Length: 362
Image (cartoon, rainbow, N blue to C red; front, side, top):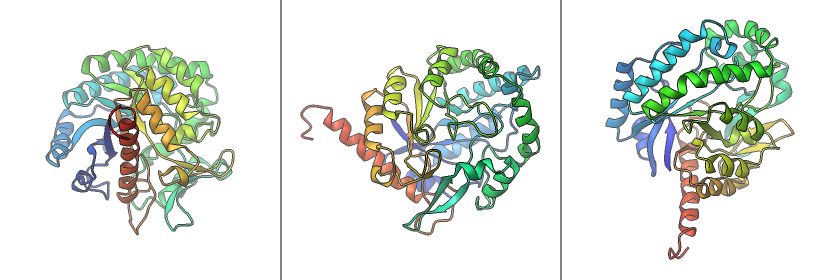
């Protein structure tokens, strides 16, 4: 298992590589090239320069989040083959740069949704928050405007301004697409890119829908155990795997996270873990929280134990964190609370690992 942190390059992050290097147990970062338009090839020279910067800071660059998938691929339009070939070429460049895991998503139109990026908690910290009625009463443009107002000037992946103009028409398009057709489009993409990923030693790790239920009648498919089984069966290669995000899947109270982890990590199909806690505020409402179990509704010990006992050897990041101690940073991605979450998760892992080995005295 390797503990890493997400980091946004080219001045789009308040957190620096030297700061990340000082967090005990963190070996590297998951990063991206946000300036490359969706559907275009990621330049090998830019990747090489980014890797050099990260390596010189004493960190590894083995994970990318994410090479976004062009909407034409998800829609199954004739133009998808050009964008799929660009994706294949990007995978080749990622392989040359030593990337071992690619976290991506196949969510239509919007990657994620929250009603508030700075919801205050009683302790004075702020968190990302979701209130279903508030979200469904807004159109995507208003959601984006609401989130951007609290983004502190940082980019919001999945809510880029150039995507907003097409959102209304895209949502209308998907109303005429059956769920079976959406699965077929996913399989078409996987069958084209998985062989290149295998050839280049890259594990593809799809991220669950966030939140894991339909919004604006859009198809949501990576949301529960049955759907994940269906997805993995679309292409049986081990390179076709999951980013198991406990905050996203955990928002659905029906999802048994330890059971999910044991099944899919036990099959070697989980390559990346985003581990965070949430607090239920209703059937479909939640606040993100501190990682400690007692601070939220998820049993973090049971979650970490399930990963450990399943033989998980991929990458973990503490995912999002609260904004604490007066920090001003990209919502969810400040330094302080993610560092606290990192050490808590590493402490759980060490205790479970030593307890599982005879003669450790634990």
